[in-house]
Image 1 (spheres, rainbow, N blue to C red):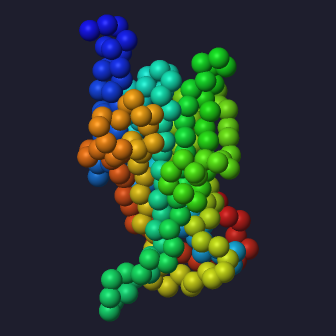
Image 2 (cartoon, rainbow, N blue to C red):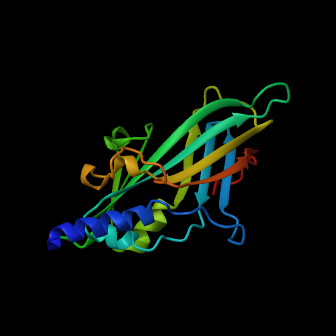
Length: 203
């Protein structure tokens, strides 16, 4: 087997390890996640305490971009029926290494959970891998629901999922299927919606 073939096999192997990135165990810190209902909408701020999987930086340095998806389902608890889903918001973060400039390009889009989210994405060029991953794992005042209608906070909570999306990998790195079983391991948490205190500056 030639050198390029071995490199391809190695990359696929590392990607399979990365994309089975496990959720944090109970011993890890509780994530700082806050969901506030304000007159202008419902907003989330979060910083997830996930350890970066071994091999992720090396895969990116090889020129393989990675996509990370945040999915927030706003739900209302109902005692007489299954909980109502009020709204769903998506946030897609694409990370790519630029070898010519030796910088990390992070693109953030919303509204879809595929490449269409990145059509009008906001882009940042960062100096280090750590800075890029800090951007991936945190969000500030992400609007989950618009002002109209903004329901009251009674019984409202948000189910947050975070995952690496294997379906958005370049086609040569997909082992047979667009979303193979075991790829894109998900992190999940439920957070109650609280009412912002009048006059208090948002975090």
